[in-house]
Length: 212
Image (cartoon, rainbow, N blue to C red; front, side, top):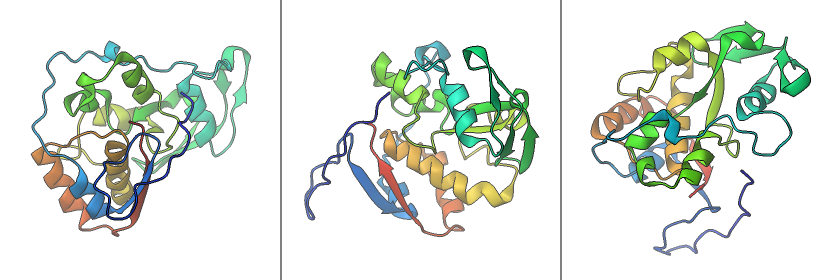
């Protein structure tokens, strides 16, 4: 999905809510506190509600392949119909290097089911498609080992954190960034887990270009 043109941020002191295409920068703890908190509801969720791994730019490579190419430490060979072979990747969740693409999954940093729970059930089909294939922010999708991705499944930080402790601050920051970008809510247990972890992390500013 083509990125929207940048727009000017609201003037200082303005109470207008930032809109899609605008960029916001907030320290991690402030960004976390800016997220709406409410109970989640998975009623009606189906993975098929999010059309994913599309070829948005019609170059023959799906979103999955685009992420693999972008994140490769050693570039894979690309064959017919964007079939990838070879290459080398680093899986941040479990601090492992992976040879070849077959052992990798592309993780939605904030899982599709979690996004449904926290606001996406009210979106249009086009918005859900855009979310599921978000190449506009490198924090949204990440190549990780299939084992770590399936261990995480659709859990939020209250029940799952990366096994690699050195990745946890980055994980919290990027989770908050994705929720901010898509204006998604957090539930009370998720808020508590994020806050507990964030207090052990640098309060580094997060810059996000809003998708909606």
